[in-house]
Length: 285
Image 1 (spheres, one colour):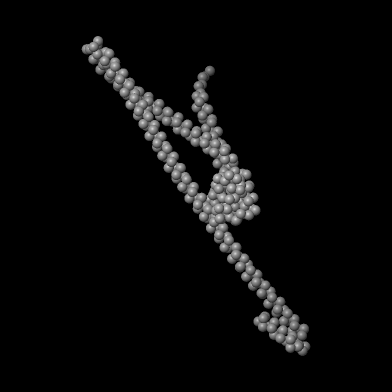
Image 2 (cartoon, rainbow, N blue to C red):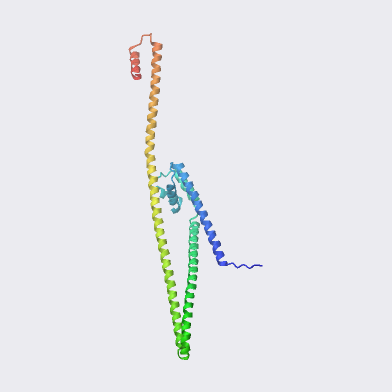
């Protein structure tokens, strides 16, 4: 029967990390689906469909504390008119958002797992370097022990105690230097990681802020363009209607003149009737 040993701690950490990763991916998929839903609803309500605008509107909802707070944030953009449709959309979106605590907790767990993985890799590097340094120390010790044995043959009794003390002192100094080097290396690696994290945070923060500003600007411009277009469309529609109505009136007037000539052409008309006929003919011509 074959025996098998399992590192329980590594197995547990692997399972925990996998669960956190899966939950985080599920949360990201849900947010992508919610973003598409926001884009579709914005198109239905205001006739605007844009991924950047949808992300901006969704981001405002995630930062809001309540539906009322979310509506206030939308009002502050000055890009949307707050009406019943917008109020219903805000309430529905706020109800679809995942709980802030669970989303934050998952992200924190993912960060902790990443930190633990980094720590385990650093420890493995330290073990490899320690083994290599110990081999070097052992080789140096063996070489020095050979030299020491020769000296001991000449001065066996006189120098044995002095050489032992010197060797112990040198070994202690080497160990102190090694520990100081390891500590300096770890501190340097930590500073590099912290600096990279700060740079990444600043880059992400600036890019997100720029994207939000651009989305708000585009949303406002599209709303303003829509407000300008609607009156122009109404004016064109009115002009088309009036032109059509005018043509219909002229046709009616022509038919009326023809009827009068057919019915009363051979009859004597009064002055008033004659003036009326002349007026209608001038209008028709």
